[in-house]
Image 1 (spheres, rainbow, N blue to C red):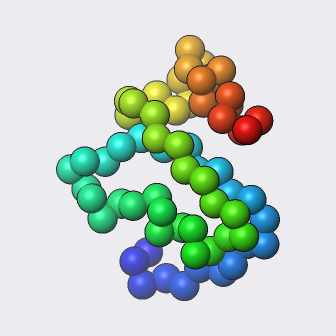
Image 2 (cartoon, rainbow, N blue to C red):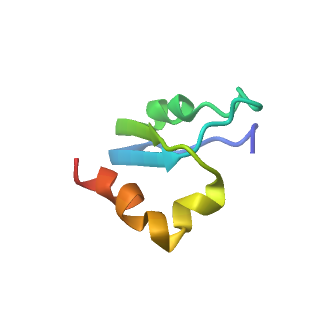
Length: 65
């Protein structure tokens, strides 16, 4: 993956993720060069929390604005 070339996406990208303090090389901002518009939102928790039905409103609420 680290050596892969990413195509440019001519639209808006919203990345919803969780912090990775133990892996600082996982920087969401690295994707900004590959899209016309890029925004990231980091939520407290783990990756499984992002698909937990109890947190669905919190996660999807960022897509509107």
